[in-house]
Image 1 (tube, rainbow, N blue to C red):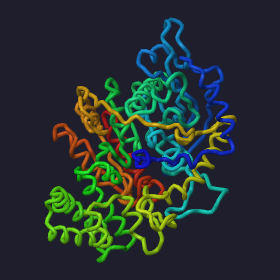
Image 2 (cartoon, one colour):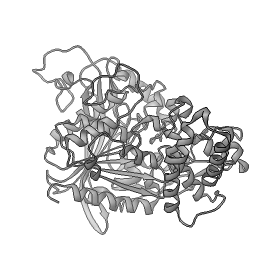
Image 3 (cartoon, helix red, strand yellow):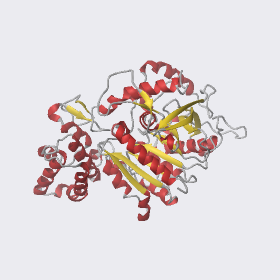
Length: 539
């Protein structure tokens, strides 16, 4: 069930698999499964192409490199591998261990120089490729989709990306181990790379190898992660302890999984997830005009709901069975005013509304489901009696265009992958299992079970590098990672209060993928460009 809940990130996922190439890919995987410490000789060579992108009237010529870097599953093994993925001649012999051939696409501005800012971008899942950020946000080409609508089928439109990040930074889109055109190889390969710490360590090794290969160690460096990519950001920022990052960008954040808006039934007694989701429910009800009394403006209304959520509402929830019936009735009536849900439903739910229940009941009388990643998107309810998510209208709306255009773009423009399948999500093979255990950096191993919480990692990174800045980004209508959850997490980082000044907050009237709305993408680009410019050394 947790796996289903954490399909937060851009799990544009198994729905994106190319069924016609499945048999071919299985044959390729059989070849890859031979245990080996080094990448096989059949690895496709990197492809280098050139192009231009127009950003704000500025024509930017760039070089694009599509290729792979091979990383080891341990530090000792990684040290034996050259940049070509082969074992170094003087490495000696180690026991065979798993390796990950990680796919990336890097865009370098021509004549940008080795000191130009460089940003590493990735999506979430966990176990997802970077296709959404690549095609939807900051690559030089952008897939055109109609916001909040499901467009007609192909042909789709790929256009110059007016909001590419190449105006202020070189960009590197990294696919997680086992996704994209990359593959994991060797004994126990899944256990070696599919887990919170294993994944972050693979990205750590990738980034260090990349900085060496392209001589970018002296560049201003940025991490830009979306959804589970923000969880990765926190662990990775702490892991890159000898690499002072200039900035970390958290898009649709979740750092403490106790705050999951869909996991309360598995975590009774931990009430904060209910309170942190309430402002998002209010925003969605506001957007769809489902409130008993429609406020004049969104943000002042949300400020009121936030104050109520962390005062009267969470106080009532924490009373548990000691909550009086009179107070319970009063809270239910106020929740009705903030969510539009019926009072009897709120009472039946004991005042605790999971995101799936909210989605299924907001338009219950119309047989309509509300999107999870972006609640502005609506679709026919597959099961009118359901109390949980059946599908996500946002995914169904954008998947076809993103998938088709990315596969076309890779082969026609970047000249890579003609005989390979691009895996958007690691679950496409049906054997995906994620290790949620995490040992926070800087702390001794816990001798009792705890949930995934990477707040200590981000705090350690910020304390270790007090000049590093963090940019928190989100959408008001995101039911997967509610926006107020991110605010709450940032204010509960275990670090000196003075470091809170290093965090900036940016929220937009969209959902999880803020960039599907062109106006929001435009403003996100402006905000992110300003963040990078302000955090380069000496700027």
